[in-house]
Amino acid sequence: MTRRLRLSAILLLASFSVVFPQGTPAGWTDVMAVASVWKATVAYDALTGTGHFLRGADLVRFKRDYPVYSVGSGLSLRAPAVRDTGARLEMSSEAVAAITRWFTERDAERASRFSIAAILIDPGHGGKDSGAIGEFGTGKDRLRILEKDVVLAVGADVYARLQARWPDKRILMTRTGDTFPTLDARVDKANEVPLEANEAIIYVSIHANASFNKAASGFEVWYLNPEYRRTVVDSKKAEGVDKNVLPILNAMLEEEYTTESVFLARSILGSMKKNIGAVSIDRGIREEEWFVVRNAKMPSVLVEVGFVTNEAEARLLSDREHLRKLGDGIYNGVVDFVDYFEHRKGPTAP
Ligand SMILES: [Zn+2]
Image (cartoon, rainbow, N blue to C red; front, side, top):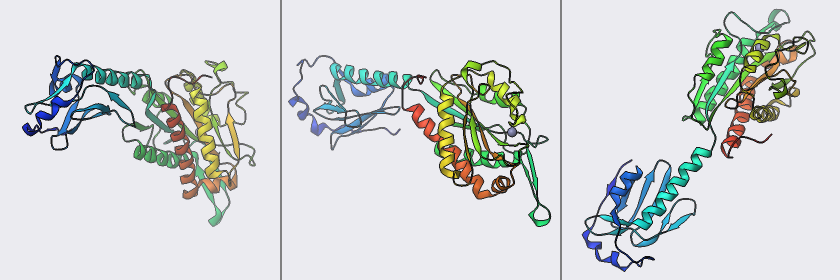
């Protein structure tokens, strides 16, 4: 912050015309001294008589000899005016107390507000682990598609867009190339992010589906039902579902559950439907008992972007434009969730 405090002796007389409720000139303090106690910067233009205190994101505007302080978005505090002695700017103890109270309230409000400090995008599989594989056609119609490639392309899009939107948040990826981080390494990456008391991280794992039923197609988003926390994933229940995600689900079971995951899942699914609903089936939110999250500080979801074992969908998933729409869908869903999460106080009531 630049500091510009220009005092003018010409304006000395004007300050005595102000009427104070308490009337006593005792308890006047140098504005610079007060500002340093607040850890605020001061700007003052002696010509217009206007100035402000800036403390973090909180701005208090004042006008010399005018007993109202503007504190943003139409709000104001009524307190004795700042006066200009020519040698220095002064403020009454009453005004100091009013502004101190306002700064303190802003601090309390910020402390009570939840924020998403970090977002971890986890493209599944990678390296030696291809994930699901789809192979179709012959000759020039031949298509071989690997889950690890599809989810990396989608994940990289989501990552880039989130980073551009929120340079002040930590946007992370579990892998940025064709590598294979272990499940522990993926989960550790989320847990390593330092968080303040009211900060959260969200975890978005991206996968593509496979089924013996070649007709199966569509996208879905998973989260964990809280009733089943710490339940070991039941392979019977998991029948027909991407076997590769089972260990991840188990790992996620180690995390604290939160209803935030449900909101995040809905938000992402709705946004994906908007983007690709015309060409792919919405399989819905999968909240079967054995799924996802347990960390109140880490809403987590697992997105299945489509089936590589369905030829029509595999061809979609090998189309860059379709992948971009998928990425946009996930991105918009995350943004909606973050906006919702950050603009209310405290955890969501179930
Ligand atoms: Zn997978």
